[in-house]
Length: 299
Image (cartoon, rainbow, N blue to C red; front, side):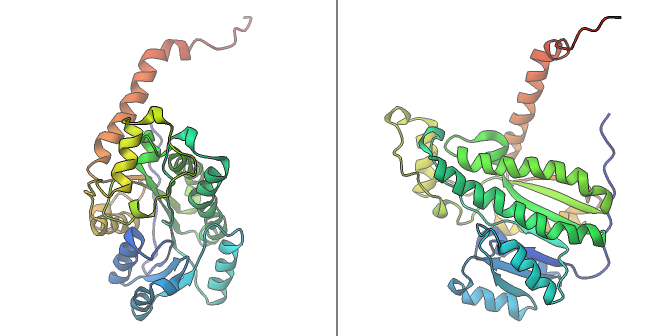
C-alpha cells in the first residue's frame, strides 16, 4: 500500500523566493511569474553586470538581485548571512542554475565530471543545507529542484549531466521524507526540451569522441544540440507558470501540494512511461529471484 500523501499548508502572505540562474531561460520566467503574482523575488546569477536591464526589471518590481556562483564553497553561507542581515526569510528555494558537458561517458575526464557535479549537485546541495534549517524552524518552506529528463531516463551523450541530476534527485527523495513533518516540501521538476539557452551553454570534453561513435545516437544527439538543430518544443513561460502554480497550490496546482515530482514537456510523457515500463519489466522478470535470495534460518 502506498504511503499517504502528506498535507502541506502555506501562510497567507506574499512568499519570498530565492531563484538561482535568473539571467535567462526558466529562472527568469519563474522570477517574472512570482513577481506578477505579488511575491518577493531574490534573483541570482553569476555576473549580474552582464544583464543590467534584467536586474533593473526585477529590482523596480520590488525584488533584489544578488551575485551567486554556486561553485563557490562559501557562496551559500555568505548569501544566507547577507539575506538574514537584511531581514529576509526564504520561503521558496529554486535550484535552477546549471550547465551540461556533453559527450560519451568514456570521453569525459575526472576533472570535467567533478566540475559538472560541483555546479549541478554540490552547489544546490549547499544552498539546501543553508536555507532548509530556517524553513524547518519556521515550519514552512518549499525547495524546487529543476532536474531533467536526461537524468531520469539516461540520455545518450549526457552521462555527466545525468549523473549530477540523478544525484540531486536521490538526495531530494530522502530530504523530502525527512522534512515533511515540518511542513517543508521538495518538488523535483523533470524538464524535457524547452526554448531556453541550455543548448548554447553546453560544453564539449577536451578528449575527442572516439571514431566508433560516428553515426551513433551519441554523435547525433551532440550534433543536434551543438548545431541548434534540436527542436525546442517546450515553452519556458508556460513551464514557469505551471511550476509556480504547483508550488503555491493554485490553478493546476490546487490540491496537489503534496506531489513531489513534476514532469514538464510533451517529450517527457514517453520518457516517464519508458522508465516505468523498464522497472515493471525488471520486477516481472526477476520477482521470484528477488524473493528467493534470503538467508535460510533453522526452524
